[in-house]
Image (tube, rainbow, N blue to C red; front, side):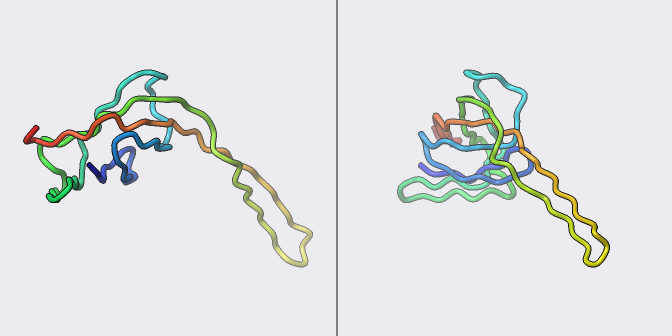
Length: 106
């Protein structure tokens, strides 16, 4: 089973057992998160598309860990003025494992 869902304003897709990096959530390692904002669910032969969300569908996930992404460097430069600035940023993330995708008919 395959699903497209929304969490923290971003859309993700995945199957059962997949690992995802999403923006930092307040839950701790081992906690479960049920995502109800499911946009699309695809089974072997059926596709359920929501308007905007599929009613009764949810994605059951578990928090596997958390951390910081790779550093992104921001570089500003203005010619002929000796102006150069470098800044780095590392975004926090939460890693989720999709345990089960549930539809309304189950």
